[in-house]
Length: 273
Image (cartoon, rainbow, N blue to C red):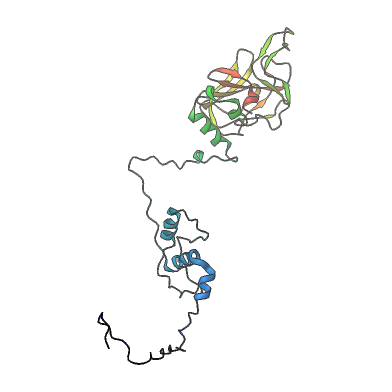
């Protein structure tokens, strides 16, 4: 029978609904699914990057997105995946060679000993200090400790500056250096590497005198000596014996008068020792 709208009316009772089929077959289980869930997506990415040899590129990509890597992948040796990672091991083929290092034709490369400055190289420290600026511009904080002791043991007998003259007894005498206790014949040592510019008699009271030029306006002088161990023009190293102490010139007894000159002007030696 048909209705007025053209639809067919059912002639009998409605049929019973068809029962849904029950599928008992199980999908194959992924043995590594639980392990991947425990590791999380970030760790899966880093492990995959390590095993596939793209750790360095993956690290750059993750850093660019604001993520922080928690693993370190060496870039100079191949990385092998382990059984715990759940990824098949990848065979290492070869190590990426380091790019060659070159310099321009006009580049100046300095491999000199003085370029490496350590506590065990005081002459290198002094040379570097004076090469950057004149000795007159060096601060006291930078100069202290740059010169070595002129004697094996330093005991001050008379300091630098104004004092009562031991010769005349008058006040206001300006002492141009530092006097150190030394028996006659004691070894006098070069305070630093330099060139001997004067060996002889100092007519203004220094007696037998040695002057060493250390460069850039820095000089040291050794006075009242009994004898010399060097000649003019000779290059000496820090700690070399340049003379023996004495009491020549304007002296009242055996000692060493030590001076430090900066651009021709005397300064307090304790600022450099």
